[in-house]
Image (tube, rainbow, N blue to C red; front, top):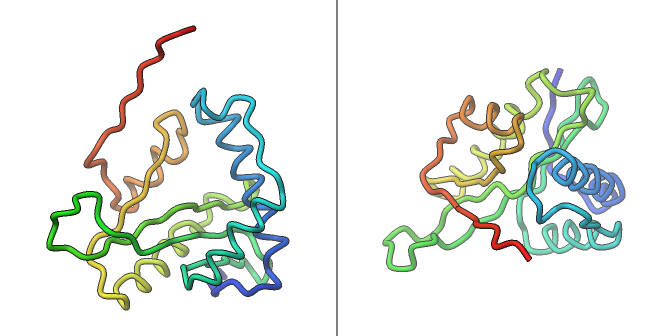
Amino acid sequence: MIAVRRAQPDDLPRLAAWMLAFFEHLRDGSGDPLFAGATLAGHAAAATFRQALAAGDLVLIAELDGMPVGYLLATLQAPHVRESPIERVGHISHCFVEAAMRRRGVTRRLVAAAEEWFRDQHVRYVELGYMTGNRQAAVTWPRLGYLPVRTVARKDLGR
């Protein structure tokens, strides 16, 4: 059984460890050269969640049969079009599930809980980003209804 709960301050060490694993996954599997050789310190990862909890952002933890297996971090933001009459959009910043626990519906359950929170905040639109080189993300997010609406393009100018 998958249960989702709000993270608490005593979850910070686990959240920081997951964020380090998430960063490593992006570094090793996204194909994004900006991650090549990049490092993330544990204290910086913990600070991200400490700030999120203090700001009232959404930090969720998924438990599978009572065992924590992943997290989702989400925020409320102004839309990228400043002139928009829409005041806020939801933004899913991170979603990570331990590799051995994937393909069991954990991400789907985390996202459903986040979408419920966004609805409670009177938010209609939710956005997220993923790297096209991250094949798992490229399959998962469209299955959950998150379809591309904007593309960020990059050109390598060499050295």
